[in-house]
Amino acid sequence: MQVFIAKDAAAAAVKAADIVEGVVRSRLRPRIGMATGSTMVGIYRSLVDRYQAGALSFSGTSVYLLDEYVGLEPRHPQAFRNVIRTGLADHVDLGDDAVFGPDGRAPDLEAEAWRYDQLVTKARIDIQLLGIGSNGHIAFNEPGTPFDEPSSVVALCEQTRSDNARFFDSIDDVPSLAITQGIGTILQAKKILLVALGKHKARPIRDALEGPVSVETPASAVQLHADVSVVVDREAASLLSTARPEG
Image (cartoon, rainbow, N blue to C red; front, side, top):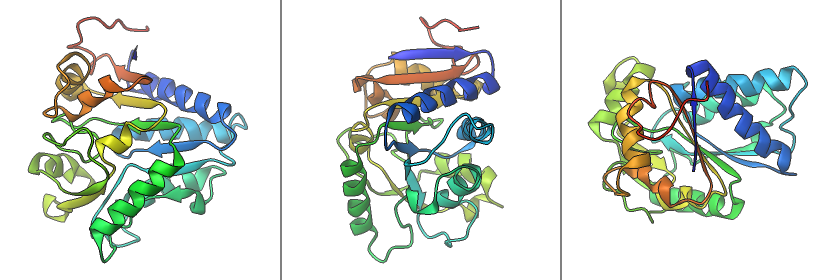
């Protein structure tokens, strides 16, 4: 595991984008697993800047969403497919037909979760981006989720809904269900890139990287993976005992 500590959020975004760019350049048809949330905004902006400067192309790349809310209208701005479209896909040479995700309005949600799990497994993701929740969750896998869990329909805990309420008019508008890649599915990716920013992520990052591997901290599952890069700013790294800043 490589841990990179950037001086601030902007530098962390650039470092994470460097890692993604390295994978894109090294593959003929890259398969990228993409997360959403405020942590990812700067990373995708940096990748868009590189494309617009003529320094990077996403031609031949396919994107696979980490998760999706259940029940949102197809045009809802917080549907994760739309978040990826407005944050990245619409601004680079990445067609809408190259963005894959679960259908949160499917009539049979469990069957849809299984279908998407098989799609992601077959794709063999080259790099999976991950954020981390305040309770240590990755994707929408809450504490207690088995590490071999496939993609599934999950109930979001109140802490997660509260954390995501800032993206909606009120917490009442935050969906209570989601389809998420399972931890077992995530660990199939060839490389994992975990990014965390801010003081409020210091404890979950410490628990994930230096604590015991436990289902009570879902993100600790990354310790079981052979190729993990972690990018954090100084605040998120403040409780780590061994890592040292890059600058």
